[in-house]
Image 1 (cartoon, rainbow, N blue to C red):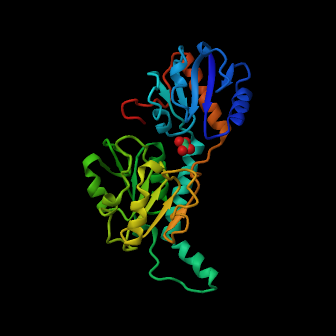
Image 2 (cartoon, protein in one colour):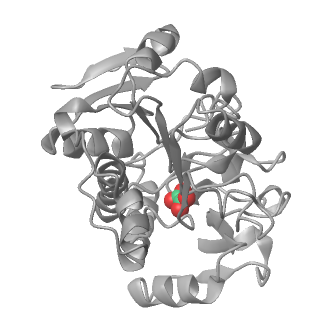
Image 3 (cartoon, rainbow, N blue to C red):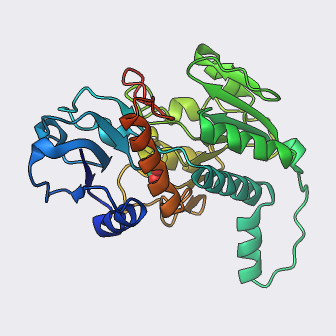
Length: 313
Ligand code: OXD
């Protein structure tokens, strides 16, 4: 009954130290020092190299160390065992901080004021719309989308959400599936918090941007993406900005991460870049969450946050 940490792209040592500290009695190993592969029953993973999990004959469950699971499914030899993902109150709260911060940055035209300050220019820009004038649309109504929607509503924004399958959420105007065009037509600021799946890859493209509202307070719509870089077509974002189809974009995730120094997104005046840190989380809290899922699994209880293999989220 050993736990394997299989991590690439992040430092493994702090995870090993953290989980061993939080669960001193447990046998926890870190790939590639697996020991006997037959000992491993559970794997906690971030971007596991393809084939590693398939070589564990007694693997019974997989836990994603992140909220997203696209990195888990990127392995074509993924064993058919239950999968869980992280849902953590701290991570959720931080994502909503990012969403509210950047929605307000757009509403209050803060980038413009930054530029005016650099020029020592005292200019009180009018008109100055309020939150109630801006229609925000959230694509993806999971835990993160719902929390962000609630907090944006508290700020006074007009908020609606879209999800692939219909969801009734108290106090929130919701759209589903084929109602995407109607949702986009009422959206001035689009917030993407979708999972990356074969259905959503590249969904944030020129044809979608053209369907966003053009009669809002800022004339052209704004895009914010903190879901996954694979959701967006960066060449289309740049073209849409240059053609006035989008007014601005705030991006936390990118097709290639870290964002290459050669990317025009870095210096485009309409783009705000954050380094995939919208939901940096309390790592001990995530560690405790992972251990709680393992204990539940060992007691024969379902994961708190099971992943649907079919939907891939
Ligand atoms: C996650 C992430 O999936 O950090 O949690 O992107």
